[in-house]
Image 1 (cartoon, rainbow, N blue to C red):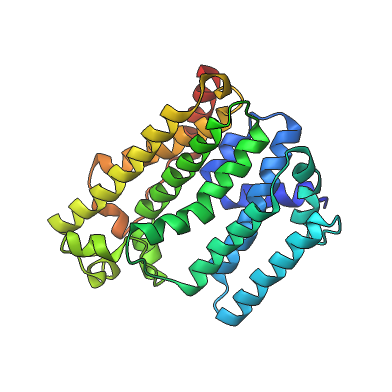
Image 2: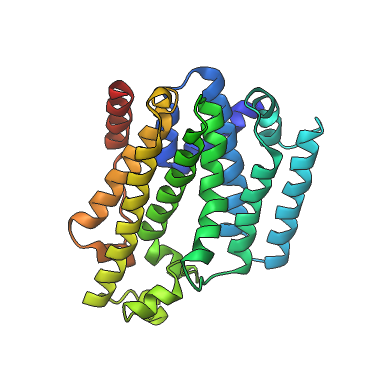
Length: 278
């Protein structure tokens, strides 16, 4: 199996909405973004699936060393090998890959967030930085596009946090800021037990509305001259924003005890129509 085939398999197996946005890219960019996504999956799986803290920390440290080897031209892992050409061709910064690992380290060491400033740092590391790297792969001419990428990454992560409230709680993690729980009169135990209430509904609507504001902000920041090269990000936005609307359409509190998702066919339709329109 080639490094590219390994990354393709990793990306396809995840079932992520991001996978559908890659389909319309020319081969070099598709392979580059798939390798980046596979890297994110590798380190994210460590934080999510490795139960022993010391083992997980050791694995993340191994990846820090591996990134150093990648930039020294001596990658060992299939994902690192697949990234070898993209980091040169698209000037992907080593620090950004390390910041993604920093975000996964936060998942190991922190399962509560005091306020939105703390959560914002986490979202920056695990999502906005990915947005910056992705924007470099897709291509841009106006530096303003990087701010769009930062804010779109934030919107994606806030959507994930809203969608996965119940699932994350069952893993012992609550990403909703404690300060905001208190503001809406919701306790940690309410979330852990999946208790529905008017206060809970208002709290979740507040989270969803903040994500919507980031989508609005990001899309307003994207310069017209970069809309075409950034179409893949716009596809991601269409899929994720539609998911957020689905969550809000009926009873937003469904996320406490179930996972809301779009069908593969609907994701493919959204990807195609967004590509055509842009």
